[in-house]
Image 1: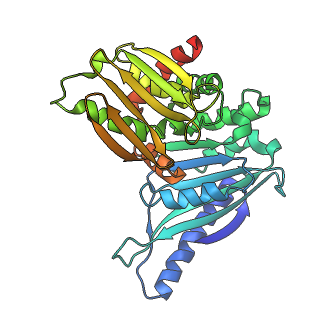
Image 2: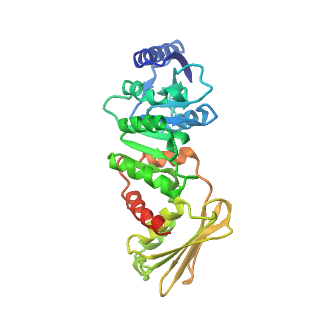
Image 3: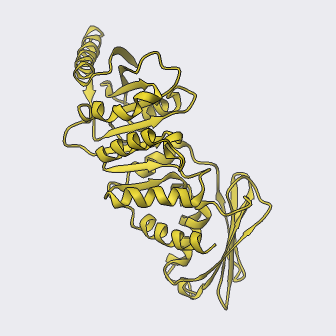
Length: 338
């Protein structure tokens, strides 16, 4: 990974990228190798106000580019920033197994004081890769809060306006606050993804496969009562999402209840029909068990997915996720009625 520091001005940053690619090419030729292959399928913008100075975001991008090559832009919002806006450019490079040629993606890191946050979007306009999708992954927690200052909301809205897709993580947020954000972005015709919905893939896939079995006599439409066990004192948005996904197609009745379980969040789902009861829940920290009164049984790996795994799954979805959009509408109904 090579890095060059430049003023946070689009023309200077782009010149810096040009010099960086020239430098990388010369280094390869100096070692008697062919030039590097420059790869880019999207612009991935990550905004973060976390105390690690953007380290986690940058590391995640370095892992993502192997499957989703991009121009990564990491915006670090920090009171510790020395200047209003400061930038550096670098390249994330790797060699595919069995290949001699390096593949490289470019990354731009911009550090800004909170007071400069509302002015970042105009800088980004000149930095997004032309004619390619722009994905905005928001980890700027202060800007996502309901009580965010007007300037924070303004800066967030401006970057959303540049984006085709907005990704955030509702874990730890109040369901109504997160749903309000999603609704606002969808009204702006943005594709929205919530990583706490993505975490539910491990829950949804075994149940979906169960009812995809053509030999199964008891169809999903007969399960008209859904019970959701959660380990918090109140259901999280993930619990509402799961209930929405299960109950939405046939408007099944939903019951939420707190239970002592393993970890934080969803603990167990129970599906009841007149002829059968199916239970799917955590049995150990990294394992879940599916059982049925019909004699069905199964065990599944349930480790906490990494950020890279979650983002890889979401970046693979180019457009809207219909299952998520339907679940959001139903989750809003459930949250309002709870």
